[in-house]
Length: 205
Image 1: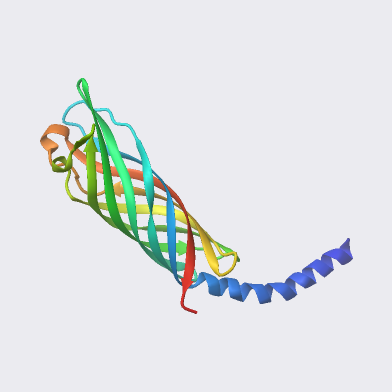
Image 2 (image 1 turned 180 degrees about the vertical axis):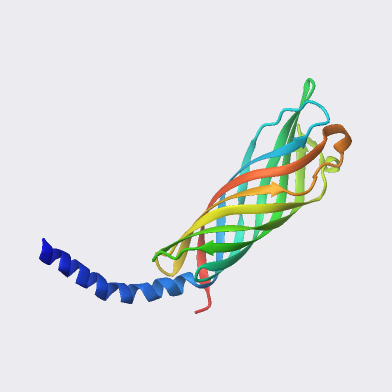
């Protein structure tokens, strides 16, 4: 048993230096990726009246550009997000389904662990409203065309070879009021969780 352990240790000592550099090289630099998943959204309400709100589930996905340099990194993306909120105004329930194109930019801090790299990140996003539907009726006049959000989350990158596999979870919290009729419904701020999976490709050598 002792001899077997010594052989395994010796092989590990020989193989690890040969394997580690390619993995580190794969992790560092610029990568172009694509991801998609689910968005669970709601909105915070500063009550002018009595409201109830419920979450809405939709699609989230897009393209991202990720740069890693050892423990630190940066990522910018362009994503399509489905959001919304159900508001109970007396006996009438308004179902607001919103869609946005968002541009999030985050700073990342990660720990390279061989072929995997977990990271946490934080930043901000600018969102442009692309659609709004309320009970089958266009509601574009009730919501502002842009939104500004804070972003916080974590991701896990796996490097099986020349490509990378990604799992990304984040929380977006609105920093601005999206309602044009605050005197009626109060201030509304987007809130949503997203969970996405994706694939990345290294750019350059």
